[in-house]
Length: 625
Ligand code: M6R
Image (cartoon, rainbow, N blue to C red; front, side):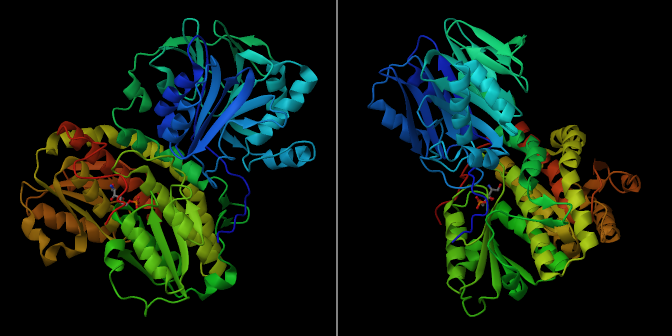
């Protein structure tokens, strides 16, 4: 059983839509939600007027479930709001799905964001309101109804409600008494208005409405708006009219879904700084020099008794696990093994696992068949267990006693990028969590790591900015090569493996990741002037060793490409091609070093005309053996 310490099912990705005009609203809403499904898809819902009554329809699972349900209802409303949900905490259930209604069903609301003071508000309203869900959003519906009873006007009710809310929100609101208008509000979550002829839209992004109009108005934080089929009016918080520019969007619908990026992979590479911020949010407490998780139920006694950690995963998640071995051993002081799930599951290990073993399964999807099977096999030995997953309530998450979620939103490109760095981020936190409970980690070191972790998002943005053009250039120069060697040592050896995997899977070029010190035991024979040798040589305790390995490869004619730390000018004497990433603590360097490697594989695949987001023979989730 998972201990739920925080009783809110929050949403941060999610897609919202609103329509008023001449068409059948239900069809527009479903069509738009399909375009927004990339923002989340664990449940969905709409509110429309059905025989003059504000009616809400919600379904768990993919949008198709809602679509099939609505198909039989023959709805004719010309106004409505809709939502597709991606929960970051808790269960995707019908009651938690949006839209949420007020007690008397006078108001329905869709919301994207997080209401930080929802508990406070809930406590105040609980006696007079009938709460149905565990979401933060529902408090908005009840507050709106209360304010509407006083103000008698929906716009004023929204203005009064948002004054109480702390946190982020994009809202679209319908009221039983106003079958011709939608009121919207925005703070720190995206929201745009779409302007058509005799019809208006509100949406989380332009993707949703591009097939109806290319004229949009981007709302600013604090804006409140009212749309009817022929009018749009925007106000500030005090309900003073404000003007927002009408923009003409030149994107086609497919490009828009990718936020203007050519591929999801590139978009997801660029999302990493935000993902790291989201993954750290609420989990780091600098004052107490500690970390906390919502769904981790391991107490101090349990943690003190752990004598070994076994990590199970596949592919990129396995590489995250290999890095975690350094964290478990160096930071926490517990022996750690990392196993490929498909290998582990067929070994006889029951006699070596026991109640003192902590088994950690890492999986973006939480649906990888081998990882699930290996985790189940390990659990038979009564081990302590923990899952790191990106998908709320995934199969693996449900099978585990403890879960830490990465907060990436849906990862759509088959090549995993943002999920990898988010997994690393969680693993740093897990290591500190275990080390603190075991009192095996130095407090000054914890403070240093936590502070540096909080700076990483900004350093990642810097790395994205500084390395992109250089990687495009390397891609132009090397995309015709048949084989690449990726070298790393110590905590960056798994980054060499991950860089090589990225290149293999999306550009179909053979690439091998190797521990640099092992080269002279065989692979160095491969090196000649045709072999690009990509070496990760950022500042570290083994820098001199890896610099020597660069020399060895160079002496054999290899084309040396090096990732180095900013300020290392000397390396230019050793290597023809150098790309610099910002400095950070040695244990955190993998988070930055992977960025140029993601770019390199992306741009090589692009030049070679490969299908970047859906490479041949691969699937995003490997749900079969
Ligand atoms: O969903 P999971 O993290 O369990 O997936 C594991 C691997 O299938 C996945 O990481 C795969 O290797 C990626 N395509 C790599 O980019």
